[in-house]
Image 1: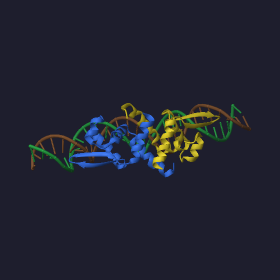
Image 2 (image 1 turned 120 degrees about the vertical axis):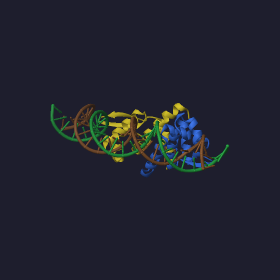
Image 3 (image 1 turned 120 degrees about the horizontal axis):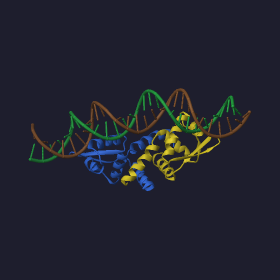
Image 4 (image 1 turned 60 degrees about the vertical axis):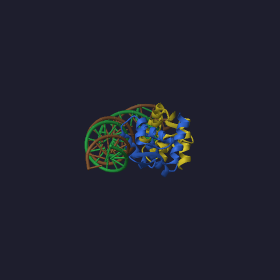
Length: 92
Length: 92
DNA sequence: TAAGAAATAAATTAAATACTAAAATACATC
DNA sequence: GATGTATTTTAGTATTTAATTTATTTCTTA
């Protein structure tokens, strides 16, 4: 792996290596979910989920759209979807 | 991904998500290298490399053998090799 | 057994992360 | 405009992580 890529890839891995964020990404594998829908499946506060989603957005891993007062989130990068698939293949 | 696996997988990802450790693992993709050989390619102190290797060993990602006063390191888990391959396919 | 090289260990400091709680924003409906 | 719900933001604290420095261990060879 080229030196320049190491930085990019490790940053991406760091973003998905938190248990809560990995859980969120697994839940988003099959399509978008609102913050509240995520919160019912991930046992923590809404504020905490929101903070982790903010981080994932800043990394370009998740993108969101607003509808009424719900915010729907989905995985923004196809490569991340493939990566999660690989993780499930290898480790599950 | 099952709840129990999320913890295991996120811990593994966290271990490989540091730029220096990712670099080390890329260098070990093609076979074992000594600490000194790694150090010539990864720009930091030997002590620092050693600390990161210790972490990778404790996570079961790297294993080592001693020969004379060299310690040769290699990736212990075939799944990690496949994961690094996937990362290179997807992001390089 | 003394000197030197390779690697680890331990201690310190600095920096980054994560969680909680409280306050603020945005929108919908009444 | 007031109320309620969804989400974000901010601030504070606690924890974890990383790098540096120094000391120690292990082995080799003279």
